[in-house]
Amino acid sequence: MGCGNSKIDKEEIVRRCKTRTRLMKQLVKSRQAFSASHNTYIISHRSAGTALLQFVTAFAGKDDYNVPPTPTVAPSSSRLETGDDWKTKSEVVTTGNFIKTMITEFSNNPEITSEIAVVMPAKSNDLVEIMREINELFATAADACSEVSSLLGVSSFSRSTSHSFEGSKVYGHLNQSLCSMGLLKKTDSLEQFEESIEGEEASSWSGSHSSTLSKLYAWEKKLYLEVKTAETLNLEYQKRIVQMRKFESRKTEGVKTEKTKKELEKLESRIMVTSQTIETISSEIFKLTQSDLYMHLVELVKGLMGMWRTMHECYTKQMHIAKQLERLINVVHSSSPSESHWRSTYQLEQKLQQWQLALYNLDKAQGDYVESLVGWLQLCNSPITWRIYTICEEWSLLIKRVPMNLALDGIKNLLGSIRSLMVQQEEEQKLERRLELIKKEVEKKELELKLLEENKYKYKQYSTSEDGNKEPEVALKQTKVESLRGKAEEERAEYVKMVTATKMRTFTILRTELAPLFQAMSDFARECTLSFEFVQDKAKTVGGGGEGHDVKMLVP
Image 1 (cartoon, rainbow, N blue to C red):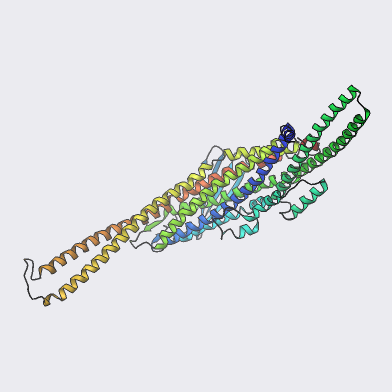
Image 2 (cartoon, helix red, strand yellow; image 1 turned 90 degrees about the horizontal axis):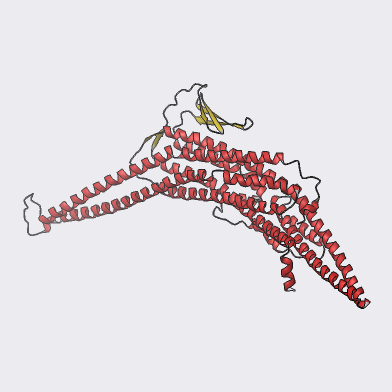
């Protein structure tokens, strides 16, 4: 029996079905990872904006920051940046108390244009308020991901509790469908199997991409079992045919011949039933692929295109707002930094790192998802799967073509500056602790000197030193105190110098390194938008085919 199963497993059609089942299982898990990484990216994106605002709020608590009066700009003044495939035209208009910058972006394709309005107070002198605008745009960009979250199957529970469980990487609701899949067993009839599918659907998100993949996986497993059964029956049928011919050639007794004929008739009947079952399963896979899967993928591409377009607009606005920081004038005070500033710096470093990692994981999860989908589609011989395959192939090329390192390096550069600032703050804290120790030592020695001077008349013997009429012991103690005071003053001067340098370093980071970050993220989001627009156009060009074709083509 074992040898027979081993031989059947080596059959091309069985191996093909087994591979299809494995790829569909992998696709289900890839969708789960894609959904989880997408949700994690939303969380990290919001957190990065919040951490940046807290960092600036803690930093700007005691210093003055002023924006010089905005020069009058004629409404007709404009700037045109030209690239190979993209042009940007910005027009700055001063109206009343506000500056309105209209940024029109257009590619060589006249149908792909976007207009972004950036409005800022013309006389804003509040660094925190400027950063609050940037933080709101972080939130707006994160909100733009909600449609894709719904398409990927991120439940409302996960989104509502995401702020409380930012570190969570596994979501229970994402495992429900996988658990139900593990309960799938070989049924006695196709009707019972369909009932089990309907029961599974009821506990999942009805009509969602998640439930569609779950059903496809269940059908693929059933198809694999039926194809394997069919091959087993065919093998047995061929053996009986050979046996029958031997009986006929040898003119053996008619009893054995009749028995073999009856067994052949039973095998033929079972083969026919199995073939009909395989055709029915293939029809179900075809219908799911043609209707649900295709529409889900088209909607997902459309949702991702809209998401990155909104993100591009938000990043572009943030970039232009951040450029206003370059005009800030800082009057740095030597006041001691607050503990909240140190904590907020550490928090910002953590959130930037999480944002960078989440973006990388999102890109990888998306690539794994598309790769699994393409692998499964390649083994399905149907015009409708070819239509989806064409879309997914372009999607796969998109992932490889989009300059992910552009965004990752943008975050990395700011992250590196924040880490260098943390090193500087650590030195600052060391100097502060050392200064505190010296101050305590000075206070201790001053108290000892005071007690010694108060009790000098109790001594019976006196001696006069060359520099005065004080006792040598008192003079020596006073010399030590003065030395410590001088050392404390030197330490304080060094500490003040370090505090000023740290504040200036922080101020420089805010003035010069936020705009490049948002520029990099804007360019990356723009490339994603254009790429998904191309994929969507590709979907439209191949969207008309696939109807009315023979569903048997789905059978391996």
